[in-house]
Structures are given as C-alpha cells and as structure tokens.
Image 1: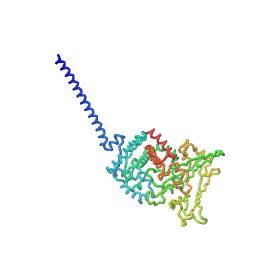
Image 2: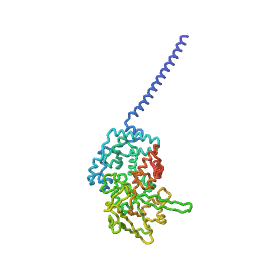
Image 3: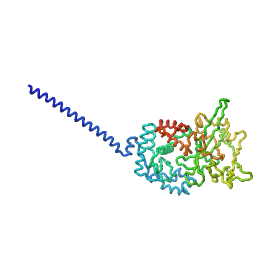
Image 4: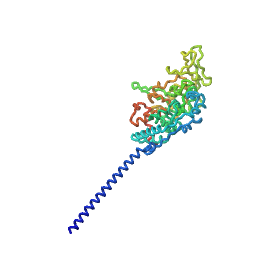
Length: 475
C-alpha cells in the first residue's frame, strides 16, 4: 500500500516538473520569436532602399528626369520659347530663336545615383518633420511630391536660376549637393500655379492683383516697355496690375475725411537695354498707370489724348513721339540705376526733356488721373479689405481703361507701400513669384523656424489665412 502511494506521489511530481519544463520552453520560444520579429522589423526598415522608405512611410514616389527625358520639355511651341523676343534671346547668349533652340538641346544634366540618394533622403526627412507638425500641409506636400518631376539644369540655363516647365522642377547643380527646402517648396508652388491656376485666383485678388484682360500691350506706351520685360517661365503673363490701397484718414478733431486715390501699378523685371548682357541685367520697376472709368451707359465715348514734349526753348525733343501713339520709343532710352529713372539719350545728357500729356474730353468730364468721389463710388471700390478689391465684382478693372503717361519708373525697392505689404524681396515683381516666396515663409512657419516675424507683412497674413483654408478644404 505504501509503495502505491509513493509511486502516485512521484508520478505527480514528475508530471508537475514536466509541465513546468514544457511551459518554460514555450515561453522561451515565444520570446525568441518576438525578438526575431522585432529585429526583422527594424532590420527591414533600416535596410530598405530610400524609395521603399518613402513609399512605406508616406506613400510617395519621387520622379527624376534624366537629361534626355527633360530635353523633351523644350519645343518651339512651348509658350516660354514661343514668346521669346529679341532682348530675351540676346540675354540668353543667342542671336536668333533657332540658335536658342539648338543651345537648349543640351540644357540638362543627368542626375547621378549619389545625388538621387541625397534628394530622396532630403524629401524623406522633410516629410517626416512636416507630418509631426501639420497633417493638412503634410497631405498637400505628399500630393505635389507625387505629381512633380525633378530635373537637373546646366549651370547656364536661366542664369542658374531654378524654374519649372510643365510639372517638372528644374534645379541648379548646387541644389543636388545641398538641397534647400525653401527652393523645393518655391518651385512646387510654381507647378501648383500652372496645373491648378484657379486655386490662386481669389488669393491674387485678395492681395490686390487683378488681370488686365484687355492686355497690357494695349496701353499706349507700354508696348515699348514690354519689349524689355524679362521672360519668366514661372510667370509668363505680364497683364497683372497691382491696385494700391485706398486709404481714408479721419481727422477726429475736425471730423474731416481725407481719401488717398486708388493707384494702379504695373510691375516687372525690365532689362536696361535691348541688348542685355545677361538675364540678371534687370531692374524691378513699378510704372504708375492712370485710369479712366468707362461710361457704361455710353461706352463709345472715349477721351482723346496727345503728348507734347517740353525741353529747352528752341530745342527739338531728344526722342520723337510716335506719330500714331504719341509715345517715346524705349529702344532709345537708357536706365540710370543710380538716379532711379530713365533718361532719354541726347547730345546733351544733362538736359532731360520732360513730357506732359494733355487730355481733351467731352465738356463736363473729369480729367483722367483726377478721380472724383463720384467716380470712385461708380467703380464700386471697397475699403473693407486690406487692399482694394471690388466687393461685388472682382473684375472691376475690366470697367476701366488704363493709360501710361510716360512718368519716370519707380524702383520697386523704393515703393514703400508695396514693400510694407509684401516684404522687400528681389523676386517680388510678379504675383506668382510673390506667392511662391510666401510659400517659403509658410514652410518655415509650419516647421517652427521662421527667420523673422513675417506676420508684420499683411500680404503674408492674407496668404497664410487663404492657404490654411485651401489645404483644409482640398487636401
């Protein structure tokens, strides 16, 4: 009997020991499997190529163009090439458009493997950082990175300035060695502007820009300015007019109102001669445009004008006005940067002819350039926005006729109202460039590393508000 009891007890002990050893082994195997899985996960992430990391983390594929592929962007029918006039061709080191096209057959470089890896890692880190900060902007960036291509330019192409053609951003050689986030988002913005332009229409209006649908070239005198306008592939239209703020000041002591008239400005990067030495031989200038409100009840009634030149008595003007347009030919005009205006060339350069425009209009009409309060109210202008836009009709500029009265140009750096609104930047000569610059500031704002307080510029505040709404609505 005792032997049976002993055998039973030993059997139980052996069973417990066996179960213990089995459970211990299972536990150890489970730990080993877990560690292997963990190791495999991290090992796979670290060993994945950058293209796979971008796809896995951000669902992004970066498209690079080699030289041959990028070359196909350049065709005679490309608006950027088709609109090249002689000064723009000369500025690019050529004499004819055919010579320019031949030169551009070798405008691109291949992107080597080291450069590709550098750019992929740059984009990976940038998207990682943006994802932590703002989901809407992250989705916006992922969308556009997926919808662009990247090409590498020869050093001479567009004087080494990054630019875009179609959906391809064309970067300078240095960018592939040391990628700049500011340049990347700037050029992405230009692609965005080209592919979905209507997403910028309201923004431009809010910033005070309106497009002169009649064409700036229809403004008497402007055709001679436009021939010197630098061709920018990222801002081909020169028909934008900036409407300076309509400001009303109230004197509380007398309760009197002083209204500053509306001011229309054409702004551009203009060559200093018809034979510029390079693309950078430009000055950013602002031309003051005078306006005449159309009589909508009688649109056929148009004022007439003639231009006379006033010089030293008895002297002939140094440049003759065109018999048809009454304007000076800017081909005979030199830009004097130090004096901040154009002087007509003459045997005696110190003697500067003056110009004066006399308008002959129907009796009772208010002369152009002297807007009355009646005219201002007729235009339907609103003072409720930071800059003048029309409350009920954003195409208000279509109801006016603009004139250029040959005033001396203003260097853009000297236009205080413009610089206080947009910031003083060498690229601020076109609304596409202004908003692309704002996109650089917005990226700094998102990443929390703003170099200065950009909110001091009302233009950027408008951009930021508009862009926040845009990306939350559509991205």
